[in-house]
Image 1 (tube, one colour):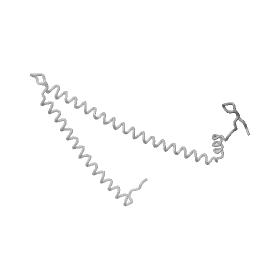
Image 2 (image 1 turned 120 degrees about the vertical axis):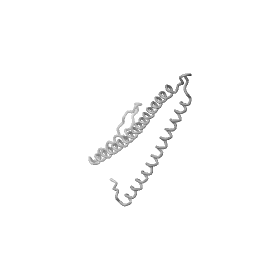
Image 3 (image 1 turned 135 degrees about the vertical axis):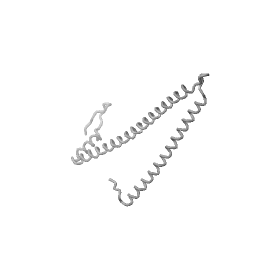
Image 4 (image 1 turned 90 degrees about the vertical axis):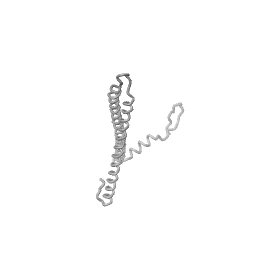
Length: 153
């Protein structure tokens, strides 16, 4: 048998090398088998890439929604600030004392709270209507599936 020197300088026997055995096995595979292996690997990579792309798109959609919501809130706060300055800071100052009229400040915030309550009620009603509509559509879909009208492609 062959003797090789190791790192310590002492002779050692040459054992089976894993790399060589894997290479030898690959050499024993037919071209068709190698092609099948490569095709499976390619399919797996494509599937992984598709999943990652879908995940990235979901994250991007989430960030876009958050940005839109933030912009909406920013615009709402700026509008409220403008109205407060216009109605209260400039228009609600007593000409005699130079102080703010408390009634106007209270009325401003009561009006704001009332408008928010109205908006919430409007959105509750819309949400309720959409839920009923969704339930009707789900029921229709189930009926169509049961009757065999719907084909999944």
